Length: 114
Length: 117
Image 1: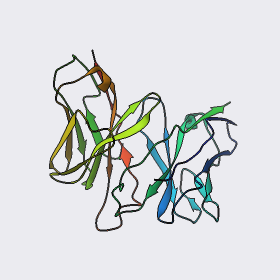
Image 2: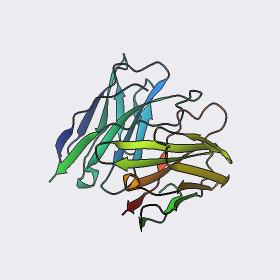
Image 3: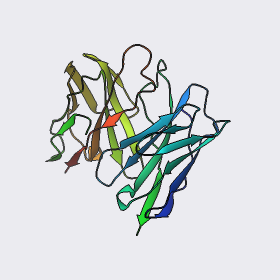
Image 4: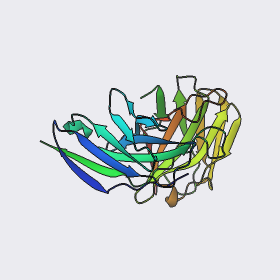
C-alpha cells in the first residue's frame, strides 16, 4: 500500500472550515484514498473515501488532485466535537492480498478551539 | 457503532493465562478484522476473516489465534497472554460480495482494553 504523509497537528477555529492535507505521491491507479478519524478512547470512525473524483457526504468533502498525488479533507464547519486524530489511508481495491487491510499512519491531530 | 459489539470492554489478566475477546456484529457483513492499537505504532492488523471458517493472518499475528464459526461472531484468543499483548483491541467489519469489496469501508467497534500484568 502507498504511504501517506500528513502534518502531525493542526488547529482550527470553531465554525470555520478545517482543511486537512495528505500527500500520497506513490499511489497506484487501483488505490483508493480513505479518511478516518479517532476520538480519544473510541474506535476509528469512517469519514469518506474516493478514487479520483471529488466526493462529498454529510460529514465532509474530499478533494483529490488530478494527478492523485495528494488530497484534502474538508470539514466545512468545524465544531469542538471534531477534535480528533485524522488518518489519511491509501488502500488497494479488491483482489489483492492486502485487501481489507487499512494501514494506519500517525495521522493529524486536529484541535478545534472556541 | 455500525452494529458491532466487543466484549469485554475492559479486562485485566495475568501473564500466562488464556484470554478470549469477542466481536459480535448484527450487519451480516462477510469480512471481520482484529486490530490492536499501541502508542507509537498506530493500528495494526492481527487477523481477518473473509467468511465462516475462513481466516488469514495480518501483520502481527504471532501469539494470537482466531475463530469464526458463524457469520456474526469473530473470536480472538491469546493462548498464553504476555505483557507485550497489553493493548487496545479493535474489531472491524465490512460488507462484501463478489469483486466490489475493495472500496467498502471498514467500520470499527469501540474496542477492548486489555491489560496483562
